[in-house]
Length: 350
Image (cartoon, rainbow, N blue to C red; front, side, top):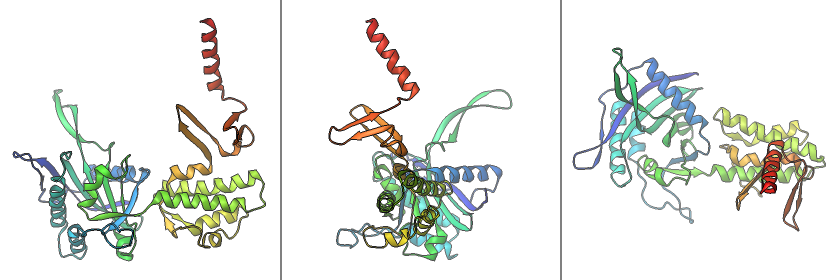
């Protein structure tokens, strides 16, 4: 992995005797070591692979009238600018960030302690600042004297409070709405609100909505062609495979690249098709693989029933009758068929 760490530091978020959370600051950066390389490298890998990340920027949320709602929290951004300009050292900048986090955490009853990790590194010609709250996890180790002893390690498997700023994109285009990414919880932001609030960040690009618009545009585009059913599905598969490859390398979808993929399938002018005003698509936007999977599969769950099948089977192995509201499956999967036979045989015995 071509990842070069510039500086990294850990600060501890602890609960004081009066019950208030506070940040215990480390006075110097972490020493460069194989352990630090492994830690930051693994966090980079885990974070890049995280599905459903949010995309945002420094600022305040906008109302329906397009005007900011409330004041912006500029303290983190200003400290970041001062560090990047060489007016503050990394330790001083991270200490300010730690204090801001402690102040924000103090507003919530559910907040617990942990470690604030901040790491500045370069990867594939881009500078990044990674910010994460890591939780300690109890473990047991064996000493050189074969004594069993308790210890703690950082729980990397449960990376929920994390954000990454693409410093290169931010400085090249301060008006961008997606230079900052963050982990979204299962219920949206909610619990992670405080983590973005302490940095003064808001969501800027709705990746899921953009991917839904792309999927709609692709469906409308292929439906408007003279391709047969198999060729249309090949075109959908080509778009999905391209988007999946972008997810794998942590890169956004490029609308012109999607157009090129479809052109390779004999479908020209997709870019012009999306520019007619019917689709609210950005030139580039983050890929959401779970949304785009509908290009290849149909799936749904409800009322205790889950159904999933490859799109190519619709109209062949799987028949849909919209009038009767039924699906007919021809050729039941062997493992499901075996379960059905065993259940039926058991009921006959009764």
